[in-house]
Length: 375
Image 1 (cartoon, rainbow, N blue to C red):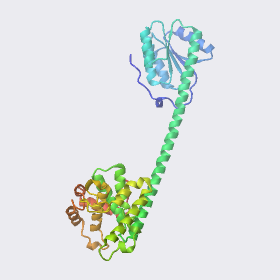
Image 2: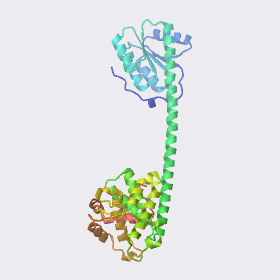
Image 3: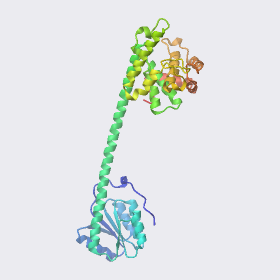
Image 4: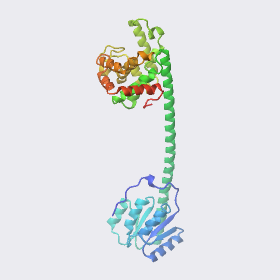
């Protein structure tokens, strides 16, 4: 005997409670007529089938038209237990009752425990007891179908809510990106950088971070930290932004104060706290001689180490006069030269794995205003 496979509630019909209809299966025509008249007198709608295969075809044509299936155990084409086992698979919302005078107790218990049948009626059948059992089975089936209908409606509403939520999140992400790009453009104008410099640096940082295996929040932090790295500097006076001579220790300290102010602003936004840490430590050096904390090696946030490399790339490949730009080949050599002192050798190695053609494509895409893949 095959044990019916389990069905989740999503397999149940989404239609509301079906008609209170009984399908009675027996190969004896006299028994079919007798049971049919008995149920009719009790105001119970009943259809009959002469065998198991006929019953399965009836259910196939109208799978939600029946609440109860009763079958005799001994039938020549398909015995009642095998029939109800198949019904449990094809229409699990139907309550299944087996009628038998010879079914052994252990077989009956096994069938009930497996879920193939709901109840076993021993012959001879007492009409009043059978009708009471059928009414109870009808209530059970109709409750199951009603619950399935409610569950189906709930799933539809949850799907609609999830779609609405996804649309709102996409809209929020688009507006956030637009605001951040606007802020970055304002910073570029204030510190007299090339148009789109912050966005190019952000795109470079995103690609390099991905090359190093960063994902999720770490990848986003590297991208946003690079995009907003100039926020604090934009608040500095022109004398610090465009010095006529090398900065004094006091001037460097003042510039760092403005960088710290920019990081503090980003800390107010929870999802930019990782970016704030990158902004704060963007002037650290791999050998520990940088500022503000004199951090070295892995103590420097990975996003800050990535930012340092791509800032060198931007500085050496972009100028106000494109004819004086040295090009990627020269920038690559300079980045390699600074590995181990200013720049993290591991980040430089990852940078070297990305071709000149790809760096050029990223720069061109950002110059055309295309978004980074993560945004």
